[in-house]
Image (cartoon, rainbow, N blue to C red; front, side):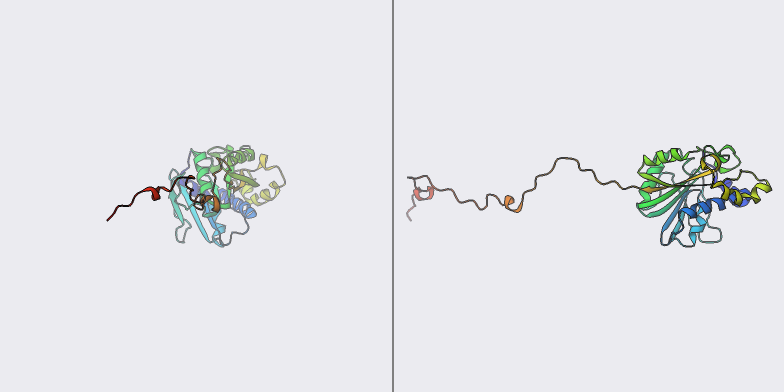
Length: 263
């Protein structure tokens, strides 16, 4: 089930809880990728709120939004770098993306296998992607008042398993959104403290969002099939240097036995 882009924009940009979630996810991402200078950074789903810190140093930043969700102009007050795309077919050159952020994209996708195949295609060799998904055991996945209450929630192990089937090797883990998904002032004002304290506990039980970093794996071409026999330089010329056949003893050559016509 895809959320509408208007609902996503309203949550992240017009509610205090959404802006708090935005900061928590940005900090977690920057902890994984502190340096993206001269890189192409792409977001898919509704990753625009998490992409903003990368505008300062990345060579190029693009926000791809699936057609089932809808698209909006982003960033506000600057030239648009967002685009509406088919969920599993992106107008992106193969092997051109250095860093990819998938937020509100995997858990709502109806064809996750096709989506992951497309992600593998666009990533550069050794390119990396971060998948931000709702934590199955977290409070945020149980509240429909936030975008993390929709779609399929995951555990770290479930994300690793699905990535491994598509040539994406899971690496570092991170988590965010440790405070309860509440609009009450107390929880909002103390959210930054919960983020710091939450990292000391098991994110499987506390965090609202899980972040899994994955690297594109390039497989070597398998050595299969029969070996082709290739002639060496001497073998290829075999027969050209053989001596001409000698006539049978006692018989003249054929040319010698043909009588000449008299003029």
